[in-house]
Amino acid sequence: MFNKELWKKRIYSILSLDSHPGHIAAGFAVGVFISFTPFFGLHTPLAIAAAFIFRLNKLTCVTGAWVNTPITIVPILGVSYKLGAFLTGARSTEFKISGLEWHNLERYAKSLILGSSLIGFICAVIAYFLCYYLVLRFRSKDAAQVEIAKEMAEVGEELD
Image (cartoon, rainbow, N blue to C red; front, side):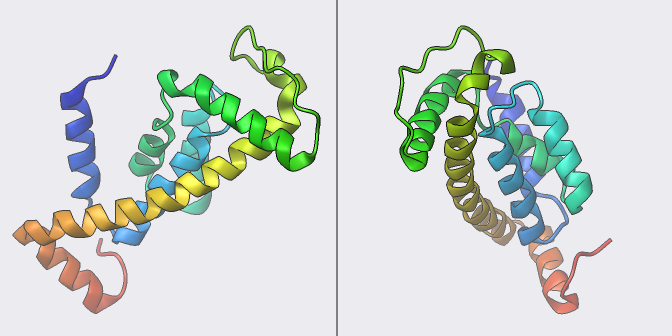
């Protein structure tokens, strides 16, 4: 289920992209936001669509969309529902679901979407700054990446 070598390779490929750190981090942050939405099975297509619409890096956006794993989905759903119900002032009923399909979640939709959007936004902001920092740190340790970063800073935009 969790392939450590695959994730190491993916993280290395993200950190070594020849794109501006802000561009890399923005794609990852949008993907993280999408990963917290209750639209299961649509996270990857939504991330690809967002990457095209907002001209973000597709690799970082899709990787960010995979942050919320099957292990964390149920606890995140519960917290999202409770937070959304609290914010809307709705009476918090017992959160019982028999599956992750939309027809099972539909009656909790208002609270789920509000709660997951808020949690997703907070996590996306954290992910942006963390990813930005990691890209800069990675580039400072690699001579070729330092040169690319200097050229990007001089030009003020991405190099193609």
